[in-house]
Image (cartoon, rainbow, N blue to C red; front, side):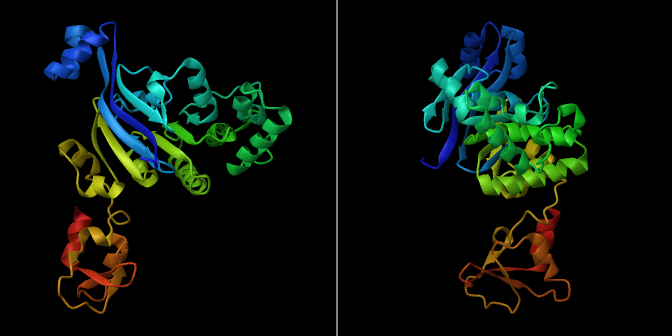
Length: 339
């Protein structure tokens, strides 16, 4: 698949001295996480996970604490060694890669942003941001310029020679993002980067990153325990539970068609107003006459409901060529709103 930047195939991670024996038993007998712990004194971190991420998309991995999401993302740049499975990044087989090639991949192709930035207090912001380039022996003038550009992209121009303790938590988080961007990697791995921030600052940084992502088009794997954040940020979402990827899909697919009770419990409180589209809830026209009212096929549920405020007659759905393709009644819209 030429448009795929990251692909993990049947990935397993079991922690413990008996990981190989535990893996064989799990695969042969279907043991649970608790049974693996009790029989082999091992922890089952990731269980037979497969997913792919397209170039330029934001792929969110979402789950509660202990679900395996952070373990999974650390396999992409092999900060954690897999017990079994394959990891492909930018056409390279990461799980069999030699140390020199792996170091080069980490330094040049993958940037990582953590919840806690761990900025060096004795280094200026420009020195913090340029550190990755310094490790690669990039000349001082060039890494200073790259640091200035990355800080400017995060609205921190003029702060280059200040120090981390002079910044708020939100500003420090933006420095961490700038540090990842300065090396111009093709891939960003972001492990709950905004979760420690106040709600308002968190939303501002989400907006800033989404706007920046449209410009730089980095392939991003974004870890979060917050489904609202996953829906807001992600082009696709993978939901994890006990090391298993339970469901993968677009935000609309996850919310409107949960695979099981676990996912349904997550999505039941999510607003569908800006998520559900006309094409999802319409009934094909199939010989019916178009109505006077119409909406585009990609219209959001909120806009569709607005058409019923003064006139409750059905609304026609039209495709990109303005052809009538479906019909939506007020009952369809209210059912979609309720979920």
